[in-house]
Structures are given as C-alpha cells and as structure tokens.
Length: 254
Image 1 (spheres, rainbow, N blue to C red):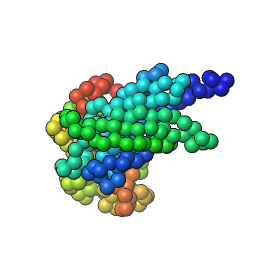
Image 2: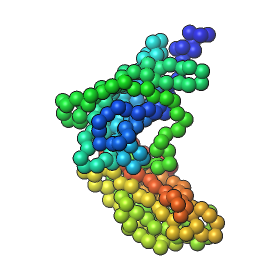
Image 3: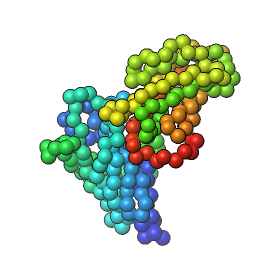
Image 4: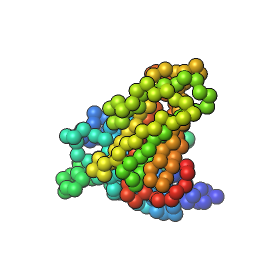
C-alpha cells in the first residue's frame, strides 16, 4: 500500500513560489499550473509581479513517480503584459516533490536564457507550495483565433437599472451603458502583433439590487462563450483575450 501511494502521488494543480531574479519586476512570483498524463507533464507557467504585470508560457516535461522528480521546460510564450524595458526569461525547472503533514512542496533549482538569446538568466534555488487556486482566477483568459470579437452585455437576472463603463486596455470605449434584456454591443480587434487585449467592465451604479451584474456573450469567429461578470463601485470585472491561431476551432457554445 505504501508503495502504491508513492507511485500514485498526484501533482496536478497549482504551485506557487518566488524567484530570486534581478528582473524588471520588484517582486518575481512564479505559478506553475501542472497537468500530468502518465509521466508526461504539460501546463502553463506564470512569471508575474501581480495579475496586471506578467508573462505566461507553455510548459512541458516529465515526472518520475518513483523518485518524485519533476523536470519542466518553458516553451512558447502565449501572452505577456510587461514594461517595454523588460526581457523575457525562458526557464527550466528541476524539482523534487515532498510532503510534510499537509504541506506539499516542490524543491529544486531553475535555470534559463533570455528569449531568443544565449544570455543567461542566472537561475537559482526554488521552492513551490501547492495552492488550491490560481492567482489569476478572477480574470478569465480566452484564446481566440480571429481578429474581431463581438461583445454583447446584458443585465444578468432582473433588470434593475445597472449601468456600466467599458474599457479596453485601460482606455474608455463606452460610458453610461444601461444594461437590459437588449444587448449593449461592441467590437474589439485583436492585433496578431499585440496578442493581449483586456476588457474591463466598471460599475457606474449598483442598480436597485447590488452588485452590478452582467451576462457577457462573446462571439469570436464561430465560437461563443458566456461569462457572468460582477462589479461594484470599488471593484471592476475583467476578461482577457489572447490571439492564438492554433486555438481549437470547434463550434461549441460554452
């Protein structure tokens, strides 16, 4: 039984830590989102200061359940939002799984090179702890394979006088939009050279039934998505779009 437990250890999920790195961020946080299939590992890597300043990359590698060793390599940069002075480091991780009571960790080292360069990122030691959720959970990220996206905002539930301002990449594109059963419609364009686009819904009031809630129907090519957004006068609601020409082209309505 003990051997079976050792071989069946599940490392799927979210792992977070910090990097010692003289980079462009004041704080260098790392989050690995790991998916294991047999010994093969895939997922995503976030290197970030906060949820507004980050680089997201694909990761791939392998996990040996007998030795509990994990090797990961960052590959494709899927999106980023960083100051223009910054460079991106493509990292490799050599980690060891351990558990002490209810605390699970991945300990080891990382190394890397500046993107499209042989310049060294210095590297160092690293400890990641298992977390129950992503730091980016409050901001949905949707991959799209089309240059034009349609956004339809509706009041979610009872029409109670909610009105909103809509911003794209921090620039106001619509104000005093009253939500109802008829959509408030707008279009945004995704530039393949600038794959990151963020739409933000700001509550102008809370209607008669707080908070300000909206149903957002997103149409990107043949794909449609439903998102439920909630904002207050203190907190906005956001969604991010990332251009990815290899996005699955199924026509499912999600």
